[in-house]
Length: 179
Image (cartoon, rainbow, N blue to C red; front, side, top):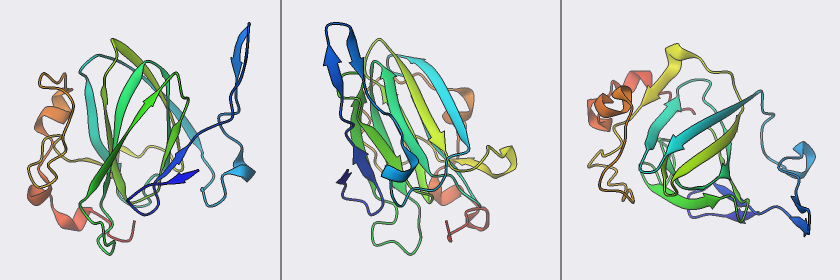
């Protein structure tokens, strides 16, 4: 595991066994990832090149995520929303792809999003709490206060992501700063 600049983010590089048949690797082993909460739900998303999904998070109880790109390549972003963090409102991004098989662990208290760099991408993520529509939140992908340097000039966005509020427009009471 490689600790990243924002406290709590971890880049995980699995040991990959390759031969003439292909490859094999363990993508998750609960005991080997000390400090991670138990995961209760797995999600898959398929997206085309230039798609941006995010920036999404859930308020209380929040969701920790373990992100993998099973096909293609993405630029994966985490934004620190923990009010008591020294890196509050800062973001970090990593490339995830089907060649290195690296994974990004994002603890509770971060918004998450990604941009598809390849023609298409299949993204898998484990989450630590079940999806609750009433606590789902999103921040506008191009919020000037965050200034995320997305690697596309022509993003493909969902209707929701097109109109998500900017951080300063959000009712801060709905964001659980204890995340």
